[in-house]
Length: 169
Image (cartoon, rainbow, N blue to C red; front, side, top):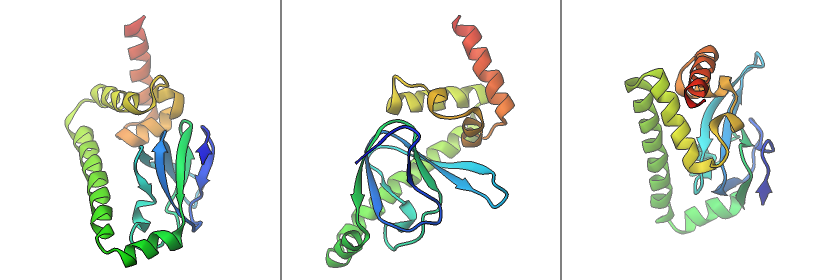
């Protein structure tokens, strides 16, 4: 299935199938009771989501929205969990997928704690470039979302982006 930029794959609290992202990029946002939203995850090609439902079903933790056009395979629940039960070696594959995601999250934590705000932004831009080029980070995320993802206030992100624009002109 194709999902175009801005379209929703699933909504927080719903239940349903798992999904394999073949190409593109998704963001996962979490809506709080007060109406505020926070960017909690980015999904890149070859991930199967939701991660917390790879072994047992659970309602969707957040809402998945396409950042660019995405090609997605639907993995029906009954078939996915049935395959796990019939082929226990598949649990190893699931564990390896979760391990890869954990390593990606550890790299993100390292970037957040060891470099300057400007360098954090540049590293995030480079990471995004690898997945969504020729689109840019600011083509797909708001300044608030960028700040949430790299641990900065929107105002700081705005200042850094303006500074970068000044350097390139």
